[in-house]
Length: 419
Ligand SMILES: Nc1ncnc2c1ncn2[C@@H]1O[C@H](COP(=O)(O)OP(=O)(O)O)[C@@H](O)[C@H]1O
Ligand SMILES: [Mg+2]
Image (cartoon, rainbow, N blue to C red; front, side, top):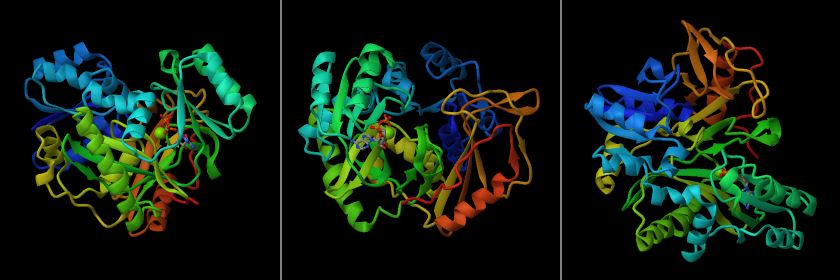
């Protein structure tokens, strides 16, 4: 089967890499893809992931594509899978109504409350004055979130009333994230380590993947602003057998039952962003897709043919498939452009020398200028390695980073070391 991937980051490179291992996959295409994906797939940089008409036109012309994997949040929230379904194209990913579990935090919080899925206590506001009044009289720290998608920057953890007032001003008055901040969620601050569980779903069953943790802050020791993720590792040492039991009974099962009662048919990957609090596991948020960079450490541990899994999700036959995982550990260190997540320069030449064979160098923001590899985003490369332990895998990752250079390259030195 020929497969098209929509997207062009490290996550999409990891998906392409996993598909490439399948003997059943013939050709892989990607829109827009990137310079790394182009080593294993045919990329079309001129077709952006939000350009539904161009993608549909491409599918009509190619005719030989049996499945399209829609990976990024925006096209899912905007209904790209519905758009494909209407045109008779098979697509892996949730339809728009199901993707709401990510694209509206107010929707997902109401869903969790209704089905008694453990999460932080919250209130939703669409009135500025009411929101400020509530925040000023609330206990701090307090967490303030934009309802809609905000490129991972719509959440403010506020230490005092001055900070909460500022967050509400940014979202509701300065409209920093446009329509996404017209409604906001104000919720209780929770404490504890965060764990990511991704689960395949065919609309009837969930098949949870191995656990992972990511590092969101830009600097070592979790300092500095939030980013799209500076690294990840799998498994999480906090995801013990007891915690897994708690997850399956109190979160995964209740989520599935809730979906069934609401008539939500979720096909694709559901991302559970969890926090292990003193009161047990709680859901911080859902995403309606593979997370990045977690995907880069989870998929290398997958033994089962990923095409079989994608097809089973689309066809509703996931319960018949046995999904197997390696017993190893995996670490991914992100190499970012200096200045990221703020302003940064693009187009800087990248040199890669003598990388070990077992390293997966997933490209996040790269392009080609003639034959030269250049930087093309905030997050540039994900250096991913598996090993016997996290310690072993991270040592291999950092050793290989010494062979990669570009001007102002920045990376965290503590990926895989977490409280
Ligand atoms: N209630 C909360 N208590 C403490 N920290 C939180 C809370 N909600 C979110 N956070 C922190 O903010 C991060 C981003 O929040 P999240 O809801 O996952 O939004 P998004 O990923 O869409 O930006 C979380 O990973 C977590 O570190
Ligand atoms: Mg999140």
